[in-house]
Length: 255
Picture 1: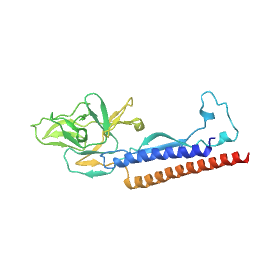
Picture 2: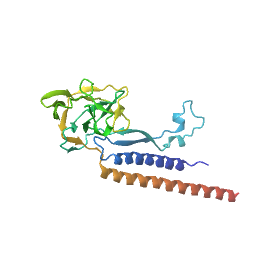
Picture 3: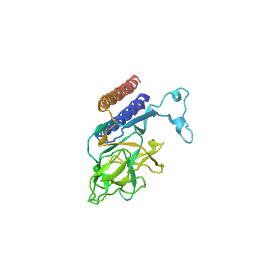
């Protein structure tokens, strides 16, 4: 015997487990530079008679009008800018507004909002968090490199990199109108796939970092809400199972 309520509660457990997973990842990155948090997306699950590709043999004029519960959908990324925090490190820059830094490991290009840079042993500007593997690209798409004996390096608001008085390169910034097509690939990096990334001019904040745009306090409150909703649906499944068992036993004895 199947129960409509059981399926609804099971769907509720699935949705709230999904919400907790996304919230846990957001909270784990609450201090990650330039992190963009994810939002759980849910939708009403369509009933089988609507989605079956070859139709559905069994239809019912009343039951087919009932909702099919909830189901999860691909998460939505929130690209709102995070708070800017002063670090005063000469190789830290934060993007003020639109844009991503382009970085490469020599094989693929990725995009990030993390502007905490360093130099590797070859004098190349790299992501501090990338263990030197991800080289920062200039506005021509080439890795930025300096002369190790050339003097102090500075980065200006327009992204121009100078060593002493000499201009070395200009940091390249890219963006797209379809940011939801960007896919997180770990390491606070985005893969653009087939999405076209166009060069833009943007204002940088030297000596600053962009913090995560995730609100930890709201996240904790939402996590508690999702946890309680999960437990409530689990309790409803247990209750419905007991009622179903009692109904079966009662009907059996009545005969």
